[in-house]
Length: 246
Image (cartoon, rainbow, N blue to C red; front, side):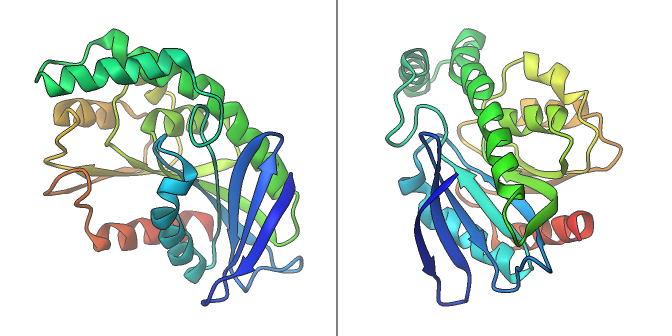
């Protein structure tokens, strides 16, 4: 991990951009973090739209988390931002747009081609980032995962023992094979669902929640579309992470 920039935000949060090999990322740490008093870490997931485009939303989440005493970090997903494109995923994205514009159902083949390569490539990168982040002074466990592509969160919850709780957004397409992985998830889950999400199947989201093997899991449904998440949803998620990471 190599830090490429550093600045102190007006609320005292330290924001540092870094590269992990060729992967860009951003780390935010609260002013309270120190080598003698390390803080828990939350990995901030996001859709594959590029860190620069997602930055305004990510920094709001990071500052909110820092106010509660959490460090947060994120990395650029494969095929996003300035990273090399994934041709199969680009084709699947075009097929998805055509289906949505025509009002047709999205095929399982399109969902698989769009999501599964992203999961396979990104999860090892998140784990490598976690290795590097937890070696830094001022950052300790436990670790949570929040938001982003839900299939990535599912895979991380299954394979990464350092992640002890996850807040997931049921707002992305899910390959059928991920339902089997969901049954292997055992960590506490806080799942957010927008009831009128125009781009996703509500019943599929409910079925996925039912499939999770966690003994502690809660579903928080709000009226409104994909971008209509109320502020109170963030407050509820913060309380969830406070219970499990502190």
